[in-house]
Length: 206
Image 1: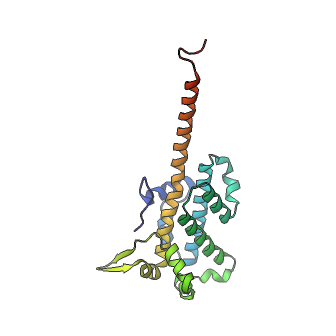
Image 2 (image 1 turned 60 degrees about the vertical axis):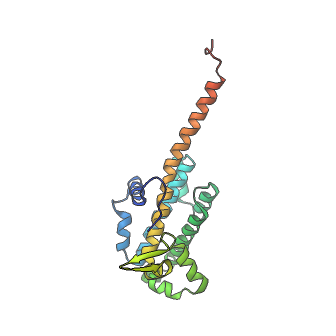
Image 3 (image 1 turned 45 degrees about the vertical axis):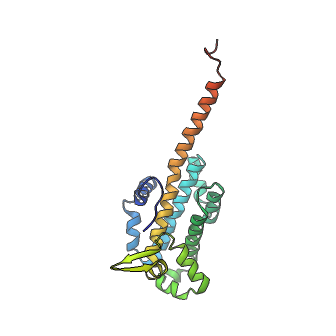
């Protein structure tokens, strides 16, 4: 149901990221077993780590990992946008997740949070925004049994699963920054080698 990142399976990329972050195998898949409050908090923590991981590779500065980890998620998302490491749509998804997470962590009473009650309180544009943004990773029509269900109806009935699917696509794309950064370094090194060789007179130097 997700379009996925170019260059590999979405969940293969997430498994690679899990290993690099030192997470237990299958961490992402097991998130669906969490209660809704824990799901949002743990998913957000992984997303924030994925953003930091992408930034350190885009900047070619692994030594900045700890400093970047202490930035607000809003700042990390802004940096990713400035560096063209995420699309506008991906940034919207990241911000929506951050907003949802922030609304839960600042009041302990929110530990009883459920997507069902949360959606019931959303109206008009706020509801449409949730369905469109955190349902971005769902196809326009979903097969449920023998019936076709619209994206909005599927997300409304399965908000946790839709959020999980949408986040998976963004996390996998963030992880690809690692491969892009390595390719960029090799390209720069090759260009520099050509420049140096091009400046050397034929026959070499004496």
